[in-house]
Amino acid sequence: MARTDIQDSSEPLPTDAELDILQILWERGPRTVREVHEALHGRQTGYTTVLKQMQVMVEKGLLIRNERFRSHVYRARHPRERTQQRLIKQLVQTAFSGSAKSLILGALSAKPVSQEELAEIRDFLQGFEEKPQ
Image (cartoon, rainbow, N blue to C red; front, side):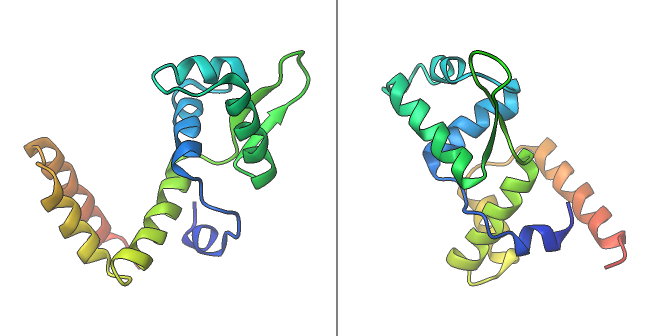
């Protein structure tokens, strides 16, 4: 997805509770409200609460509802990566005064990073440096 799509997007960012639902849909694919509710089993959330939340997410443009079947099937409107990039952009702007460096240093110091993850980060940075800007 092009950077301008991320920067110019006017749709709202998902809340934490909405991200829980999106995670399920990204990992498992399109689902009914009942299936999402069951996947949220560890959270004390009622079926009608999940239903209402998913209806609101359709209105906000975060989900798409397929009404062809008796039970409506919902799916994420955008891929996980696009949503993550929008959330990171917002976080960089609000918490790190626009500094990607501060975000990365903060993330690396906040939690232990495995050697495998460090190698992946190095590979990514090397590829990023080699790309024409």
